[in-house]
Length: 346
Image 1: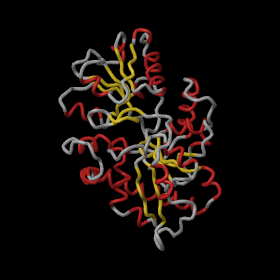
Image 2 (image 1 turned 60 degrees about the horizontal axis):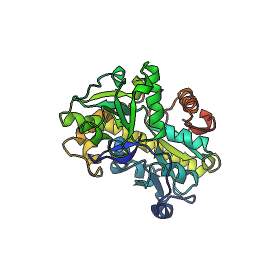
Image 3 (image 1 turned 180 degrees about the vertical axis):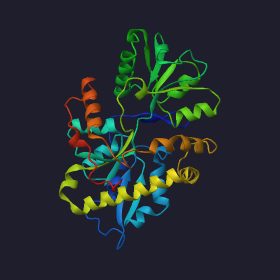
Image 4 (image 1 turned 90 degrees about the horizontal axis):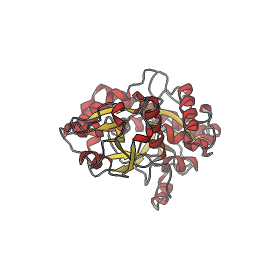
């Protein structure tokens, strides 16, 4: 989960709260709103704003493929994919109805539910966790056991701290022997310069690929292989109350997810074409390395249950874990924050 741009031009960590920026006014003005009209497959296109979790990157390849291939227009939608001022903005602006749909994270959606925000996850864009423990080949850290006595950098976020605590306990590593360092946006720089032994917060399909391409022989251990319950890294969120009461909005969400499913299938069928598509919008990424990041992302987009499908029991398990780790103040029922009802048939 991410919130910061590193000095290497790629992101690490996710924030769970910040003041909304002035750009919200622009987003509110360009959002699809409650009066969007038009029928699926014909008539006037329904303007639909989707607030991303961050700047365009390999995780968004299905979204941009669906847009550039015309799948959204075929579904009767004129979709704007809008980067946010902060990764916590999608839950806030979707909850208030200022934005039609958002891209967020399962942990962020659970936090939003605990806070009483009016959001629900309607589909998994990246159905598995990407956050990983990483170290360069020069580090002494090659396994979780090697974290004993190590200096480990995070972005200083509560979720990452909880991940690290769980990982150490699950692997019988003395947490008191580990020095945690908050390096903010400089996770990769701290690791590459040798200021820390390892980091927690980078993505296995992005930062890990960058390190490997630079010949740094990284050790990459997904947090879900080290004791953290699995979760969906990226999810599509909608306004829950509006879904219950507004048939036009229900149709919009169904049409959007149907078109996105086609985009996801196109990425799986032709990763090279998908890499060319995302390269047109993913600023700050080495064009020689970006296709490798897409290749690493593609297998992670496959969902054995069908595109976008989410397991309510798994969500409940993860929400219970967040509660046990004191990441949320109030327990969350999975049925309140996740649904498969608007996804296309498998």
